[in-house]
Length: 423
Image 1 (cartoon, one colour):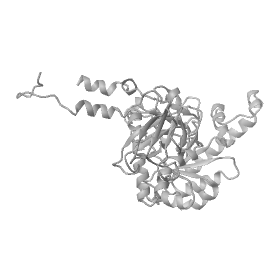
Image 2 (spheres, one colour):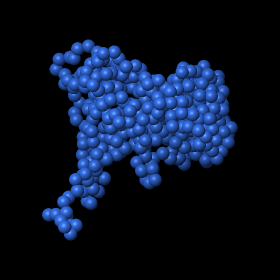
Image 3 (cartoon, rainbow, N blue to C red):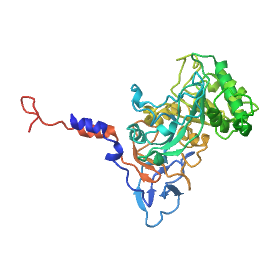
Protein backbone atom coordinates (compact mmCIF):
# COMPACT_ATOMS: atom_id res chain seq x y z
CA UNK A 1 0.00 0.00 0.00
CA UNK A 2 2.85 2.37 0.84
CA UNK A 3 4.39 1.71 -2.56
CA UNK A 4 1.07 2.49 -4.22
CA UNK A 5 0.78 5.79 -2.37
CA UNK A 6 4.31 6.68 -3.39
CA UNK A 7 3.41 6.06 -6.99
CA UNK A 8 0.35 8.26 -6.64
CA UNK A 9 2.19 11.16 -5.05
CA UNK A 10 5.67 11.12 -6.62
CA UNK A 11 6.10 13.83 -9.27
CA UNK A 12 6.20 12.28 -12.70
CA UNK A 13 9.00 14.57 -13.84
CA UNK A 14 11.27 13.21 -11.10
CA UNK A 15 10.50 9.62 -12.07
CA UNK A 16 10.64 9.88 -15.86
CA UNK A 17 12.64 12.83 -17.07
CA UNK A 18 12.52 13.37 -20.83
CA UNK A 19 15.65 12.32 -22.71
CA UNK A 20 18.10 14.96 -23.83
CA UNK A 21 17.33 16.69 -27.11
CA UNK A 22 18.64 14.88 -30.17
CA UNK A 23 21.07 16.81 -32.32
CA UNK A 24 19.21 15.53 -35.36
CA UNK A 25 16.47 12.90 -35.82
CA UNK A 26 15.14 11.65 -39.14
CA UNK A 27 11.82 9.81 -39.46
CA UNK A 28 11.97 7.55 -42.50
CA UNK A 29 9.31 5.58 -44.36
CA UNK A 30 6.09 6.85 -42.78
CA UNK A 31 2.98 8.30 -44.39
CA UNK A 32 3.11 12.03 -43.61
CA UNK A 33 0.28 14.50 -42.94
CA UNK A 34 1.60 18.07 -43.11
CA UNK A 35 -1.31 19.72 -41.30
CA UNK A 36 -3.49 20.14 -44.39
CA UNK A 37 -3.12 16.99 -46.50
CA UNK A 38 -1.45 13.60 -46.73
CA UNK A 39 1.75 13.89 -48.74
CA UNK A 40 2.53 11.57 -51.65
CA UNK A 41 5.18 8.92 -51.15
CA UNK A 42 6.90 8.58 -47.80
CA UNK A 43 8.98 11.75 -47.36
CA UNK A 44 11.61 11.91 -44.66
CA UNK A 45 10.95 14.27 -41.75
CA UNK A 46 14.08 15.86 -40.32
CA UNK A 47 14.00 17.28 -36.77
CA UNK A 48 16.91 19.40 -35.61
CA UNK A 49 17.40 22.05 -32.96
CA UNK A 50 13.79 21.85 -31.81
CA UNK A 51 12.47 22.65 -35.29
CA UNK A 52 11.47 20.79 -38.42
CA UNK A 53 14.49 21.16 -40.66
CA UNK A 54 12.93 19.58 -43.76
CA UNK A 55 10.10 17.42 -45.04
CA UNK A 56 11.39 15.39 -47.97
CA UNK A 57 14.81 14.90 -49.43
CA UNK A 58 17.67 12.72 -48.29
CA UNK A 59 18.50 12.12 -44.65
CA UNK A 60 21.40 14.37 -43.60
CA UNK A 61 24.55 12.52 -42.51
CA UNK A 62 25.13 12.05 -38.81
CA UNK A 63 21.46 12.07 -37.83
CA UNK A 64 19.69 9.42 -35.78
CA UNK A 65 17.47 7.53 -38.20
CA UNK A 66 14.13 6.18 -36.96
CA UNK A 67 12.36 3.75 -39.27
CA UNK A 68 8.60 4.34 -39.22
CA UNK A 69 7.53 2.30 -42.25
CA UNK A 70 3.84 1.41 -42.04
CA UNK A 71 3.24 4.20 -39.52
CA UNK A 72 1.56 7.59 -39.88
CA UNK A 73 3.35 10.82 -39.02
CA UNK A 74 1.47 14.00 -38.13
CA UNK A 75 2.10 17.28 -36.38
CA UNK A 76 1.47 17.15 -32.64
CA UNK A 77 -2.19 17.73 -31.88
CA UNK A 78 -3.29 21.18 -30.69
CA UNK A 79 -6.19 21.42 -28.22
CA UNK A 80 -7.58 24.95 -28.52
CA UNK A 81 -9.61 24.93 -25.28
CA UNK A 82 -8.45 23.11 -22.14
CA UNK A 83 -7.84 23.67 -18.44
CA UNK A 84 -4.72 21.47 -18.33
CA UNK A 85 -2.41 22.53 -15.54
CA UNK A 86 -5.13 24.53 -13.80
CA UNK A 87 -7.37 21.59 -12.83
CA UNK A 88 -6.07 18.41 -11.22
CA UNK A 89 -9.09 16.95 -9.40
CA UNK A 90 -12.28 18.82 -10.38
CA UNK A 91 -14.09 17.93 -7.15
CA UNK A 92 -11.21 19.12 -4.95
CA UNK A 93 -11.18 22.91 -4.80
CA UNK A 94 -7.56 23.08 -3.68
CA UNK A 95 -6.50 21.73 -7.08
CA UNK A 96 -8.72 24.00 -9.22
CA UNK A 97 -7.30 27.38 -10.24
CA UNK A 98 -10.02 28.69 -12.56
CA UNK A 99 -11.59 31.31 -10.28
CA UNK A 100 -9.93 34.61 -11.23
CA UNK A 101 -11.89 36.85 -8.87
CA UNK A 102 -9.97 39.64 -7.17
CA UNK A 103 -10.83 42.38 -4.68
CA UNK A 104 -10.14 45.24 -7.11
CA UNK A 105 -12.66 44.05 -9.72
CA UNK A 106 -16.27 45.18 -10.07
CA UNK A 107 -18.61 44.05 -7.32
CA UNK A 108 -19.94 41.04 -9.23
CA UNK A 109 -16.53 40.05 -10.61
CA UNK A 110 -17.87 40.24 -14.15
CA UNK A 111 -14.70 41.67 -15.69
CA UNK A 112 -11.56 39.65 -14.89
CA UNK A 113 -9.32 40.71 -17.76
CA UNK A 114 -6.21 41.49 -15.76
CA UNK A 115 -5.72 38.34 -13.70
CA UNK A 116 -3.07 36.08 -15.28
CA UNK A 117 -3.94 32.37 -15.01
CA UNK A 118 -0.56 31.39 -16.48
CA UNK A 119 1.09 32.23 -13.14
CA UNK A 120 -0.83 29.30 -11.62
CA UNK A 121 0.07 26.75 -14.31
CA UNK A 122 1.35 23.44 -12.91
CA UNK A 123 3.79 21.86 -15.42
CA UNK A 124 4.09 18.75 -13.20
CA UNK A 125 0.38 17.97 -13.35
CA UNK A 126 -0.33 14.24 -13.67
CA UNK A 127 -2.81 15.11 -16.43
CA UNK A 128 -0.02 16.25 -18.78
CA UNK A 129 1.75 12.90 -19.49
CA UNK A 130 -1.62 11.15 -19.93
CA UNK A 131 -2.69 13.81 -22.43
CA UNK A 132 0.64 13.68 -24.25
CA UNK A 133 0.28 9.91 -24.67
CA UNK A 134 -2.87 10.77 -26.63
CA UNK A 135 -0.77 12.70 -29.14
CA UNK A 136 -1.57 16.18 -27.82
CA UNK A 137 1.59 18.31 -27.68
CA UNK A 138 0.17 21.85 -27.44
CA UNK A 139 -2.78 23.23 -25.51
CA UNK A 140 -4.49 26.57 -25.09
CA UNK A 141 -5.33 26.89 -21.39
CA UNK A 142 -8.53 28.88 -21.03
CA UNK A 143 -9.92 30.56 -17.87
CA UNK A 144 -13.61 30.59 -16.99
CA UNK A 145 -16.03 32.84 -15.14
CA UNK A 146 -17.69 36.23 -15.37
CA UNK A 147 -18.47 38.05 -18.60
CA UNK A 148 -14.78 38.64 -19.32
CA UNK A 149 -12.91 35.61 -18.00
CA UNK A 150 -9.34 36.66 -18.80
CA UNK A 151 -6.61 35.73 -21.26
CA UNK A 152 -5.65 32.22 -22.33
CA UNK A 153 -2.07 31.02 -22.69
CA UNK A 154 -0.32 28.40 -24.82
CA UNK A 155 1.69 25.54 -23.38
CA UNK A 156 3.67 22.73 -24.93
CA UNK A 157 3.25 19.56 -22.90
CA UNK A 158 6.84 19.06 -21.77
CA UNK A 159 9.19 20.56 -19.22
CA UNK A 160 9.33 20.63 -15.44
CA UNK A 161 9.05 24.41 -15.02
CA UNK A 162 6.64 27.08 -16.18
CA UNK A 163 9.46 28.69 -18.13
CA UNK A 164 9.93 25.42 -20.03
CA UNK A 165 6.27 24.80 -20.82
CA UNK A 166 4.58 28.18 -21.29
CA UNK A 167 5.19 29.23 -24.87
CA UNK A 168 2.99 32.29 -25.16
CA UNK A 169 0.79 34.33 -22.85
CA UNK A 170 -2.15 36.63 -23.69
CA UNK A 171 -3.11 34.52 -26.70
CA UNK A 172 -6.80 35.50 -26.62
CA UNK A 173 -9.18 37.28 -24.25
CA UNK A 174 -12.16 35.10 -23.37
CA UNK A 175 -15.71 36.29 -22.76
CA UNK A 176 -19.14 34.73 -22.36
CA UNK A 177 -22.51 36.31 -23.03
CA UNK A 178 -24.62 33.15 -23.19
CA UNK A 179 -27.78 32.48 -21.26
CA UNK A 180 -27.71 31.70 -17.55
CA UNK A 181 -28.65 33.56 -14.41
CA UNK A 182 -28.30 36.96 -16.06
CA UNK A 183 -29.58 38.67 -19.19
CA UNK A 184 -27.74 38.34 -22.49
CA UNK A 185 -28.35 42.01 -23.14
CA UNK A 186 -26.85 42.91 -19.77
CA UNK A 187 -23.79 40.76 -20.42
CA UNK A 188 -23.28 42.36 -23.82
CA UNK A 189 -23.62 45.79 -22.23
CA UNK A 190 -20.94 44.89 -19.68
CA UNK A 191 -18.69 43.83 -22.55
CA UNK A 192 -19.51 46.94 -24.60
CA UNK A 193 -18.81 49.33 -21.74
CA UNK A 194 -15.62 47.50 -20.79
CA UNK A 195 -14.25 47.74 -24.34
CA UNK A 196 -15.39 51.35 -24.75
CA UNK A 197 -13.70 52.34 -21.50
CA UNK A 198 -10.59 50.39 -22.45
CA UNK A 199 -10.41 52.37 -25.70
CA UNK A 200 -10.84 55.62 -23.84
CA UNK A 201 -8.27 54.70 -21.19
CA UNK A 202 -5.80 53.68 -23.88
CA UNK A 203 -6.31 57.00 -25.69
CA UNK A 204 -6.25 59.23 -22.59
CA UNK A 205 -3.79 57.35 -20.37
CA UNK A 206 -1.63 60.39 -19.63
CA UNK A 207 -4.68 62.48 -18.67
CA UNK A 208 -5.96 59.64 -16.49
CA UNK A 209 -2.61 59.38 -14.69
CA UNK A 210 -2.74 63.14 -14.05
CA UNK A 211 -6.32 62.87 -12.75
CA UNK A 212 -7.64 65.09 -15.55
CA UNK A 213 -10.42 62.80 -16.85
CA UNK A 214 -13.85 61.91 -15.58
CA UNK A 215 -14.14 58.76 -13.46
CA UNK A 216 -14.14 55.33 -15.06
CA UNK A 217 -16.65 52.65 -14.16
CA UNK A 218 -14.08 49.83 -14.21
CA UNK A 219 -10.67 49.62 -12.51
CA UNK A 220 -7.80 50.83 -14.65
CA UNK A 221 -5.97 47.48 -14.39
CA UNK A 222 -8.86 45.76 -16.17
CA UNK A 223 -9.00 48.41 -18.86
CA UNK A 224 -5.24 48.20 -19.46
CA UNK A 225 -5.61 44.45 -19.98
CA UNK A 226 -8.51 44.98 -22.41
CA UNK A 227 -6.81 47.70 -24.45
CA UNK A 228 -4.98 45.26 -26.80
CA UNK A 229 -8.35 43.59 -27.49
CA UNK A 230 -10.00 46.89 -28.33
CA UNK A 231 -7.06 47.71 -30.64
CA UNK A 232 -7.50 44.39 -32.45
CA UNK A 233 -4.11 43.08 -31.33
CA UNK A 234 -5.44 40.29 -29.11
CA UNK A 235 -8.40 38.20 -30.35
CA UNK A 236 -11.68 38.21 -28.46
CA UNK A 237 -12.84 34.60 -28.03
CA UNK A 238 -16.55 34.61 -27.21
CA UNK A 239 -17.96 31.43 -25.69
CA UNK A 240 -21.45 31.09 -27.05
CA UNK A 241 -23.64 28.37 -28.60
CA UNK A 242 -26.98 29.86 -29.61
CA UNK A 243 -27.24 31.10 -33.20
CA UNK A 244 -28.95 34.34 -32.22
CA UNK A 245 -26.18 35.01 -29.68
CA UNK A 246 -23.55 34.51 -32.39
CA UNK A 247 -25.44 36.91 -34.65
CA UNK A 248 -25.64 39.42 -31.79
CA UNK A 249 -21.88 39.22 -31.23
CA UNK A 250 -21.22 39.76 -34.94
CA UNK A 251 -23.48 42.82 -34.92
CA UNK A 252 -21.89 43.99 -31.69
CA UNK A 253 -18.44 43.95 -33.33
CA UNK A 254 -19.47 45.87 -36.47
CA UNK A 255 -17.45 49.04 -36.91
CA UNK A 256 -14.85 48.01 -34.31
CA UNK A 257 -11.33 46.60 -34.58
CA UNK A 258 -12.30 43.43 -32.71
CA UNK A 259 -10.86 40.14 -34.00
CA UNK A 260 -13.56 37.65 -33.10
CA UNK A 261 -13.42 33.92 -32.50
CA UNK A 262 -16.43 31.80 -31.57
CA UNK A 263 -15.84 29.08 -28.97
CA UNK A 264 -18.57 26.46 -28.64
CA UNK A 265 -20.81 27.43 -31.54
CA UNK A 266 -23.16 24.45 -31.25
CA UNK A 267 -25.71 26.28 -33.44
CA UNK A 268 -23.11 28.01 -35.62
CA UNK A 269 -24.27 26.09 -38.70
CA UNK A 270 -27.42 28.26 -38.70
CA UNK A 271 -25.34 31.41 -39.29
CA UNK A 272 -22.57 29.93 -41.42
CA UNK A 273 -22.99 32.58 -44.10
CA UNK A 274 -22.49 35.41 -41.60
CA UNK A 275 -19.41 33.74 -40.12
CA UNK A 276 -17.96 33.18 -43.58
CA UNK A 277 -18.62 36.77 -44.65
CA UNK A 278 -16.93 38.14 -41.54
CA UNK A 279 -14.03 35.67 -41.62
CA UNK A 280 -14.76 34.48 -38.09
CA UNK A 281 -13.48 31.03 -37.13
CA UNK A 282 -15.20 28.56 -34.80
CA UNK A 283 -13.70 26.28 -32.14
CA UNK A 284 -16.35 23.67 -31.51
CA UNK A 285 -17.15 20.48 -29.60
CA UNK A 286 -18.57 17.81 -31.95
CA UNK A 287 -20.46 15.86 -29.28
CA UNK A 288 -23.02 18.68 -28.96
CA UNK A 289 -26.07 16.96 -30.40
CA UNK A 290 -29.69 17.85 -29.77
CA UNK A 291 -31.43 20.12 -27.28
CA UNK A 292 -29.51 19.47 -24.06
CA UNK A 293 -30.22 23.09 -23.06
CA UNK A 294 -31.90 26.24 -24.31
CA UNK A 295 -28.64 27.44 -25.86
CA UNK A 296 -28.30 24.24 -27.90
CA UNK A 297 -31.80 23.53 -29.13
CA UNK A 298 -30.57 23.21 -32.73
CA UNK A 299 -27.23 21.53 -32.05
CA UNK A 300 -26.36 18.77 -34.49
CA UNK A 301 -23.39 16.37 -34.84
CA UNK A 302 -22.52 17.49 -38.39
CA UNK A 303 -22.09 21.13 -37.34
CA UNK A 304 -18.37 20.99 -38.21
CA UNK A 305 -19.07 19.52 -41.64
CA UNK A 306 -21.59 22.22 -42.53
CA UNK A 307 -19.28 24.99 -41.39
CA UNK A 308 -16.29 23.48 -43.19
CA UNK A 309 -18.19 23.09 -46.46
CA UNK A 310 -19.37 26.71 -46.14
CA UNK A 311 -15.76 27.90 -45.96
CA UNK A 312 -15.69 28.68 -42.23
CA UNK A 313 -12.41 27.76 -40.52
CA UNK A 314 -13.32 25.11 -37.92
CA UNK A 315 -11.19 23.75 -35.09
CA UNK A 316 -12.15 21.03 -32.62
CA UNK A 317 -11.36 21.22 -28.91
CA UNK A 318 -12.04 19.22 -25.74
CA UNK A 319 -13.08 22.18 -23.51
CA UNK A 320 -11.78 20.15 -20.57
CA UNK A 321 -8.61 19.15 -18.74
CA UNK A 322 -8.95 15.39 -18.40
CA UNK A 323 -10.78 14.83 -21.72
CA UNK A 324 -8.05 16.49 -23.76
CA UNK A 325 -6.40 13.09 -24.25
CA UNK A 326 -9.49 12.15 -26.32
CA UNK A 327 -9.06 15.04 -28.77
CA UNK A 328 -8.56 12.77 -31.79
CA UNK A 329 -11.67 10.78 -30.82
CA UNK A 330 -13.65 14.03 -30.95
CA UNK A 331 -12.29 14.75 -34.42
CA UNK A 332 -13.03 11.17 -35.46
CA UNK A 333 -16.67 11.62 -34.49
CA UNK A 334 -16.86 14.80 -36.54
CA UNK A 335 -15.53 12.79 -39.49
CA UNK A 336 -18.09 10.07 -38.80
CA UNK A 337 -20.74 12.81 -39.04
CA UNK A 338 -19.52 13.84 -42.49
CA UNK A 339 -16.47 16.09 -42.04
CA UNK A 340 -13.77 15.21 -44.60
CA UNK A 341 -10.94 13.13 -43.13
CA UNK A 342 -8.17 15.61 -43.90
CA UNK A 343 -10.33 18.43 -42.51
CA UNK A 344 -10.84 16.41 -39.34
CA UNK A 345 -7.09 16.09 -38.80
CA UNK A 346 -6.52 19.74 -39.74
CA UNK A 347 -9.17 20.69 -37.14
CA UNK A 348 -6.89 19.38 -34.37
CA UNK A 349 -3.54 20.46 -35.84
CA UNK A 350 -3.09 23.37 -38.23
CA UNK A 351 -6.49 25.07 -37.96
CA UNK A 352 -6.54 25.76 -34.21
CA UNK A 353 -2.96 26.97 -34.44
CA UNK A 354 -3.78 29.30 -37.36
CA UNK A 355 -6.92 30.68 -35.67
CA UNK A 356 -4.81 31.57 -32.64
CA UNK A 357 -2.00 33.08 -34.68
CA UNK A 358 0.40 30.20 -33.91
CA UNK A 359 1.74 29.58 -37.40
CA UNK A 360 4.67 27.42 -36.29
CA UNK A 361 2.56 24.71 -34.65
CA UNK A 362 0.18 22.11 -35.99
CA UNK A 363 2.15 21.81 -39.25
CA UNK A 364 5.03 19.79 -40.66
CA UNK A 365 7.13 22.15 -42.75
CA UNK A 366 10.60 23.61 -42.58
CA UNK A 367 10.91 26.01 -39.64
CA UNK A 368 7.91 24.72 -37.68
CA UNK A 369 8.30 23.70 -34.04
CA UNK A 370 9.25 20.00 -34.00
CA UNK A 371 6.12 18.74 -32.24
CA UNK A 372 5.53 15.46 -34.05
CA UNK A 373 3.64 12.21 -33.44
CA UNK A 374 4.21 8.79 -34.99
CA UNK A 375 1.00 6.75 -34.96
CA UNK A 376 0.47 3.00 -35.27
CA UNK A 377 -2.36 3.63 -37.75
CA UNK A 378 -5.06 6.17 -38.61
CA UNK A 379 -4.88 8.84 -35.86
CA UNK A 380 -8.68 9.19 -35.81
CA UNK A 381 -9.24 5.51 -34.97
CA UNK A 382 -9.59 4.84 -31.24
CA UNK A 383 -7.51 1.65 -31.47
CA UNK A 384 -4.51 3.57 -32.85
CA UNK A 385 -1.64 4.41 -30.48
CA UNK A 386 0.77 7.32 -30.44
CA UNK A 387 3.95 5.24 -30.55
CA UNK A 388 6.40 8.15 -30.53
CA UNK A 389 5.81 11.72 -29.41
CA UNK A 390 8.33 14.50 -29.99
CA UNK A 391 8.07 17.91 -28.33
CA UNK A 392 10.57 20.49 -29.56
CA UNK A 393 12.44 17.62 -31.19
CA UNK A 394 12.81 15.64 -27.94
CA UNK A 395 11.27 12.20 -27.83
CA UNK A 396 9.01 12.00 -24.79
CA UNK A 397 8.88 8.99 -22.42
CA UNK A 398 5.86 6.73 -22.82
CA UNK A 399 5.06 6.86 -19.13
CA UNK A 400 2.36 8.40 -16.97
CA UNK A 401 0.95 7.88 -13.50
CA UNK A 402 -1.55 5.49 -15.06
CA UNK A 403 1.14 3.31 -16.65
CA UNK A 404 3.17 3.24 -13.44
CA UNK A 405 0.18 2.11 -11.40
CA UNK A 406 -0.62 -0.50 -14.02
CA UNK A 407 2.92 -1.84 -13.91
CA UNK A 408 3.00 -1.80 -10.10
CA UNK A 409 -0.16 -3.85 -9.65
CA UNK A 410 -0.31 -6.07 -12.73
CA UNK A 411 1.63 -8.80 -10.88
CA UNK A 412 0.19 -9.56 -7.46
CA UNK A 413 2.45 -11.22 -4.86
CA UNK A 414 2.01 -14.96 -4.40
CA UNK A 415 -0.01 -16.02 -1.33
CA UNK A 416 0.05 -19.13 0.85
CA UNK A 417 -2.92 -21.34 1.57
CA UNK A 418 -4.09 -19.12 4.43
CA UNK A 419 -4.22 -16.07 2.18
CA UNK A 420 -1.12 -14.39 3.58
CA UNK A 421 1.55 -12.98 1.31
CA UNK A 422 4.27 -15.54 0.70
CA UNK A 423 7.71 -14.62 2.08
